Length: 164
Image (cartoon, rainbow, N blue to C red; front, side):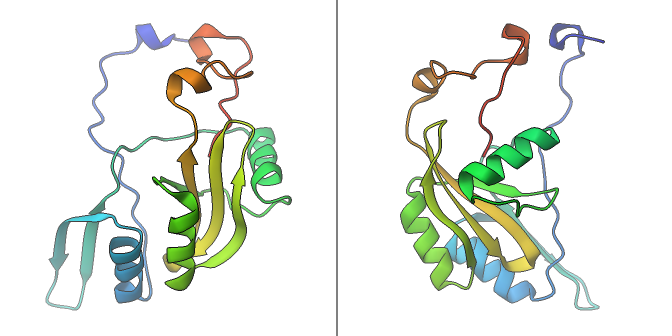
């Protein structure tokens, strides 16, 4: 097994999640106009094909084992609800963003809840059949790193960052 320091320089420049939306206009209105993702580019084809690329800020890929996924669902929702892939958006005000997205047509799965890793997380079912988390960090990174279970895989044998 290689360590992170044995890996070549990263070549990935961007993580892009591509989602097919039956109701394209509703999905654009929800994610761009209500959630506030900035339009980066849009393309259309002569056959009615349309795509819009929305800037969601910094992208990360969070890989969780099944036990972690179950624990997150239990903490945030109280039951197992998330599909294998869930999309999480960091926002400045999770409660206000949740209210705004509910008014825009999302379905609440769980209201904003303070997690053990000190973020305020809500769960919604949103357009384009996405199960999403809105999260607001309540502590800075340095403060969060002092909490039990935080760290990096390179610096700890047992690490759980709480997830989103």
